[in-house]
Image (tube, rainbow, N blue to C red; front, side, top):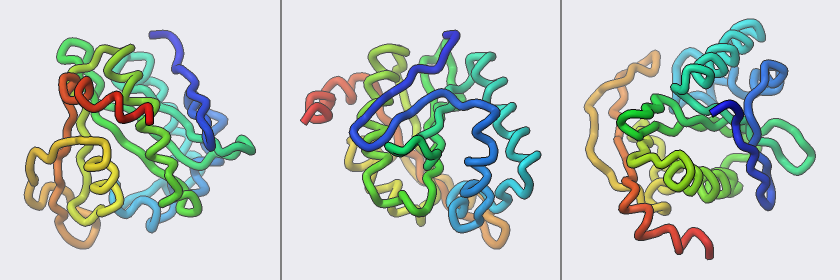
Length: 187
């Protein structure tokens, strides 16, 4: 794969990440409240954000991840989504997303999944997609349940958030499960 596909949806557009996106991403990925279910150490400087973007792009060139920026109708960067831990041999990947607080609970991730799941299973021919979340992340739990991801289990106190250890809940969807529910995505 040489390029990251573009998805144009009703409210948003997903396009490949570029180094020039670093300032826009920094606006919300530097906020502890935005990153509370991801890391206790959000980026602290624009330079750090640029390094993060460069690492994501390097991962794409190595076929290890696919990073997208999510834009609103005005072309403003409102989120970041990626498939990471992408493994061509095992045909699997994990999902990760960060949405600007102003756009959370607005259906953005529903639109994202409606587009990336068909891409992942039908175009990339993945067999398994994983979403692992902090146990307290009720929004992500509802989203994954809504799309038919299965809860596989809880990894007890697997991540430290800077103050305490967090349980991580692992969800997954297999291609055969996707095939059973994909017609509901078109409604």
